Length: 354
Image (cartoon, rainbow, N blue to C red; front, side, top):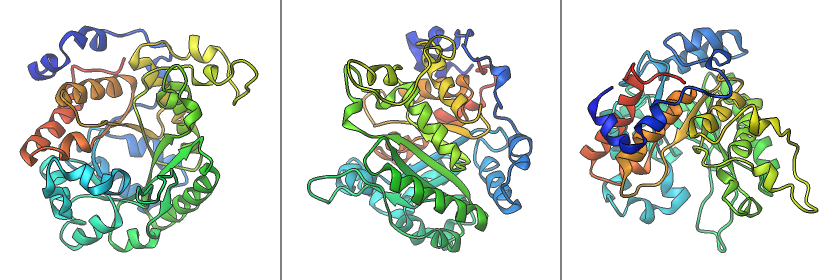
């Protein structure tokens, strides 16, 4: 292991690197590897053009040929507002700077809006795989709402040469039924046209905040993943789980919510973060659809947090990280460095799946 990763993990190193007793053994999983597309997706209903675009993403950037993914997502100008997102580095109001960061950072793909990628398509769509985020929650409606709405068409993404489309569903929200139907139809068309599909599988409901914030519970996020692969997402983006027992918390007193089996918490997961993340992988058809975890907000310990998140994801059987704010809310050279730090975890052969 590189000294840098070891030092970044600090006192978490043994806890994260020494864990070797997962509830779900790795032998049950379809793990990342150079042959992942051939081993998994050639048996699916994805057509040859989808396979080619999946292979293009898996074989681009510093992680090319490993089966792992490092993706730069920058849609926060809509999701979190432009000023709030780019005040730390106003250069990223410029779409080309976003794509440049992904290229210089050695990413497998760049994920952004119709506007960002459309503005740069003729210069860059053949140089790095484009992932067009087709829906967003805009923050200008008053009061703010939480609804993912389409900002363009699947055909627009296809015409600009995108390798994939991405979309968000707020599972658990009042708007989820519309979003599920809309995104399922979009994914079907994307596959027909030959593009891969990536789903931001987010949980959203104020009732999920109890004694803990169960928006990041392994059981609820795992079920969101399971719904996501049901509508044929090829790759799932999910927040790293921080706790478990969302279904239990929402089934207290006179309330009834969903269904659970207590073995979910005793035989399929422990409270170790690698085990919690593995439960997410299991809900991705045991890894047949790749799990990429989000990098989270930028803060004071970005490099350490990014390294730890990457180690958890990799050792759980995940396929990589999709990290935006930690990379673009700083000077480009530092953004490249943090992306490379994440990638180094996946390139380090001494860090193995638990």
